[in-house]
Length: 111
Image (cartoon, rainbow, N blue to C red; front, top):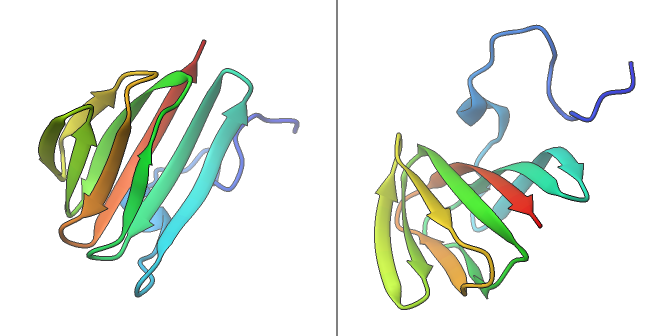
């Protein structure tokens, strides 16, 4: 099978938050799909870890799977927790810091 999805089991019910582990003092990522116009990636961040402020050429949707993080978009700061979703618009500086251990599914749609 030549699939666009990888690093994930097919035809099985899965809990996304269980597909990535926490590691002390680290940010871990697991790419599920990546094509030139889109990517889907699981992330886990230990408490206090973060992703530094950057911009992207696509809109990014964060679906929080576990924990709590502080996400900065432009000059605004949002506290997000399990079950919540936030969109980070393209070309606007954004970053995040895990206030607790934190897992997310990040979907980026590019122009």
